[in-house]
Image 1 (spheres, rainbow over the protein chains, first blue to last red):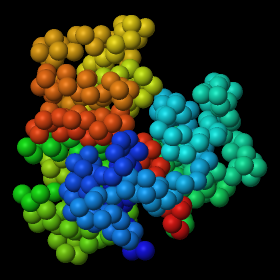
Image 2 (cartoon, helix red, strand yellow):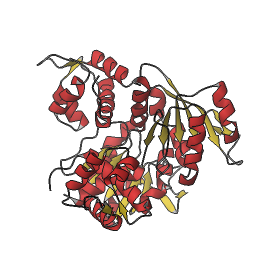
Image 3 (cartoon, helix red, strand yellow):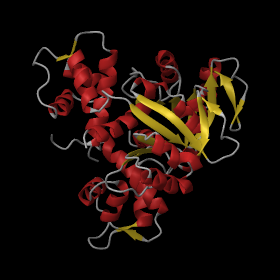
Image 4 (spheres, chains in turn purple, brown):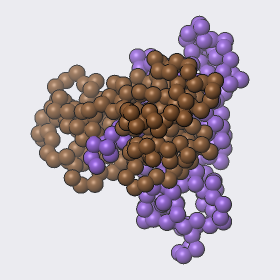
Length: 203
Length: 203
């Protein structure tokens, strides 16, 4: 398989969402483009990464394309996710319906704040971060979500990596150092607003 | 100015964050690439969109590059932001420090739930969504953040557009229809996890 850019992966995610909502048995590249805010040529290019899909003039078969994209994105299995940081954003993420729908199951929440430890969040009890390593030895996780202050993030990530976690979604506004075999994705909410301020400033 | 892709805008946002944290007076494209998880060639290409920056072998002057990127992203002014939807994610966003740091000021929060209306959030009183239009007539906003359930999102967006809002950050998992002169950016938290599941599934 050719190297796939993150932009392509993100667009595949978007196409998938629309495919899952589609009512018709087929969908055209033009329709996917319109829904995803891109061009038909881009849709065809994105899907061409994975071999031949669809027939000219007939569009893509929705169930097949859905299955292929889910497979490409690794969504045909479920993932265990632990969340570190029981703050407001952590609380919002724990309740986020979209995660479970996609097969991402938050199995544990950790914090170091004694006032939060033991409280119940969405059916899970917030655990003391001191138990992180022993818990992960017993029940390894696929992904960790890190929602701690910037100054605490690297230490938390070091502990997660040491415990064998290979994929981290980071909400702390800081660049994290990890070994080559660990994938980190940093989410920056302000960045999303900056794509809008760019538009407002350059129209 | 040539057309700039959203990927470039997103990388400029990332470079800006590192420039603001930089201690040295200059920074090389290699260093920016390392921090931003991309290549030196990509950094040079991204910055070349805006004319000539930096000197070969000397790197980029941090203060100048910071100012130029802030200018490009439209961050040299402040933005008024209203938030619609006083749920958990809305609450997390209201408290998000990164917004104010970047000049995005949340000036009002709206909800339709009588139990939430009147409650105080981060110094702001949650207002009845019924007052949206009259409030915006008195105090126009630059950007609206929509954090309502999927089935309510289009109606809220229609009202915002009708009231003159030109930029919308949408957290509802739904494709929104807006006029051509309105910019919408949809944030999908599950998508971020999907870039990680892709890595886990394809390593």
